[in-house]
Length: 235
Image 1 (cartoon, rainbow, N blue to C red):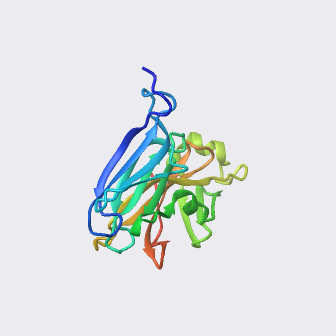
Image 2: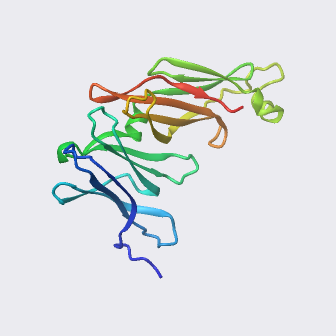
Image 3: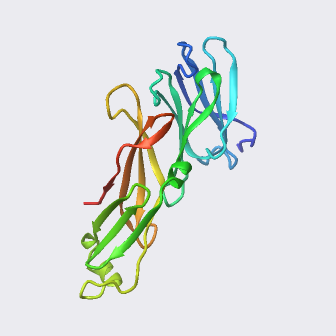
């Protein structure tokens, strides 16, 4: 049976105080399946919040949240002892990119605190192959540089890029992709969540992975700031 485009389904549901009045609220994520119930793609994602104290329901369309497997997570990310709302979904593309949005509903006002696109655009990256079978990954904004050995790529791969003396045949540029995972984690064990963000670092093409940039960010002075950044390489 084909699902009508206007039929809404519950994607995820959580219970917790998101308004700050001390009473648990019901938070529901709904969406439609425009290509039928047998396909996993979800569109027209809506966030519904039922106030636990008053019973009043409020709904918000979430632009940019379409995708696969949308989920909810409630937790305190700002230190105000009130839950924020993390909405995450998969793009389904070959780059493994995710769509991630963190909202506050404190005092019944929906405010966007974080989204993966703004995070990605806040940093300038450069990925360049070097002589002697190495690549340089540079976060120009944070002034951090990482050197990756390419020897693990194997002789066939290296012979396509390098001369026998280890010099590059032609200049080669790579890239850092938008976030492919945003995870809540309480790194400091103080009851306040940070966001741990992973980004793929690629070489000559999308499937040519060089590693992952890992960046935990924490809430400070009304915005998220990086705590540190590391490059995780393949063994």
